[in-house]
Image (cartoon, rainbow, N blue to C red; front, top):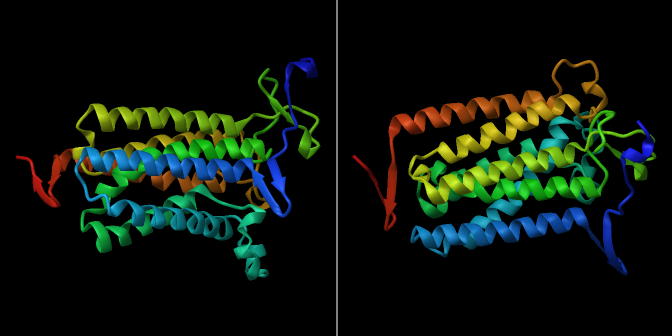
Length: 276
């Protein structure tokens, strides 16, 4: 196929700079995502007459957990050999290196703490709400990866293949950032419909289960056409991303089964009652 049929990608990851301040697409996507998430969860809280004072602390927990969890996930799952010898560089988040699996684990741990200290409600109650905007944030972050010309796929002859010229690539590669972003947007649409148009939010764990199944099934499948991220993954039948995705998918299935078996749980005026 003629090389002109492909998409030549040479976009700068930087939007603009003012002296020492550099504004990059990746950081902007993170910020926009969290602002959107704050706004959407605020609407949820108002819809359910929940305490608005919870919102600020919830997002402080979420932002810290996402960054710290994603960074430690990258360090432990993908780069321990290097970072164990250069521990100070674990703090160099601005150099890149965030793992979505670590981010999810960080969020779960933070929500356990937040549920016990702030809302006094079941962990799954808050997870069922934060996963809805979180998957949209994930879609924006993958767009940031595209602007950084990183985390792309294997060579392809498909006409929408990207030639990532900033990385001195000369052949087209699968734009797996776009594939993942679209899968996350689809999941976001499903979760939006389930929350606002059905009674799914009353079944603790169903929304979280759907999130885990959709997001990590997509991640598992897309990894088959994604370039190896770290040298140790070469020769593995399943790469690290796929091994890490599998337990999340299984957990999602279990959550849905248990939620249906338990039945709806309704919270009113901070007092829970099980609908008979």
